[in-house]
Image (cartoon, rainbow, N blue to C red):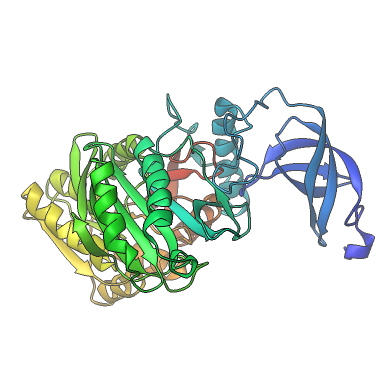
Length: 453
């Protein structure tokens, strides 16, 4: 279909019944057969929407009026939810969020993966789905009066929305945000110096009730040690302040963090397991749900006492170390030095003698192992959001494990990776979505695949 022949055009206002929720958090309705994705829509709404984009296959629109609200539509407790890009689903009742996340996973696995018959459980939710995040990233902006404000980025933009409060962050993070804002405005000597503060990252241990703060700056401004000293004096829970050099204001890339004062690591607990975690290292941001995730991965791996396991993308050892306790030889692959250092410390702390850690990219390490005729009993794959990709899924199957456990935070890349594994003889047996990120469209999913024949 040509865009000119589409049933809607940019600027049209149409009435639409919204049926489902898409990956990305938009509600979906159909107008004369064309899918229309609606920002801030809730499945079950009867609404008036204004078309903002039209392509040959679909259109996008903004919600302008709710004629008949969905029974799942609620009043969001955060007044900034439509400005801040963090929580996309606060206006949808939490039980309905869980249903829609299950449906997103099922639809992606069936449509993209071509695997409609796979058993998929209902999404595991939280009893109290607030204040669950252990990490926050506040972006800095200098207003017309030359004062620093810290907040989150506006939906789909690089514009900073000042944060008064955030109901998914740990309360210590909010105290840090308020205090750093005040201190930066007090100790920085000029507007130009304040503008050198780009971002503030917080990491809070729920187990210790302690925090690390990383200041991401242009260079190393003179106010950094003053802010670090005052921050740790005002907030006793802050036990370390670090600084990193930014590589651009609007991107996440930065140098490794250097300690200004105090510690560089915290200890976090996931159920019965304790981990040393650095400010720079990736670690699941929702400890309560991450504990359930670890238990599920260990259960579905089903390692025997002498069976070997490979944990690709092992990070600080989140899955690797519990698996090593249950099985035989355990190999962890990790490319980030900070996470690898933490993993080494955790191996020592756990007194594990059956763990080997290898630095490198999974895309290179697994093919080398396959070429050398390597074998293992179980492989665990926990890739970043972009997924494993065909190189990793193909070479993982060449190691001939009896089982592959895949953890994914994106339904589309999950489906593509499952399709790749299935094409090489590893059929997904069951999937379990876990709500690691309440009030957002994101959902974590664990899948277990077994070799056919």
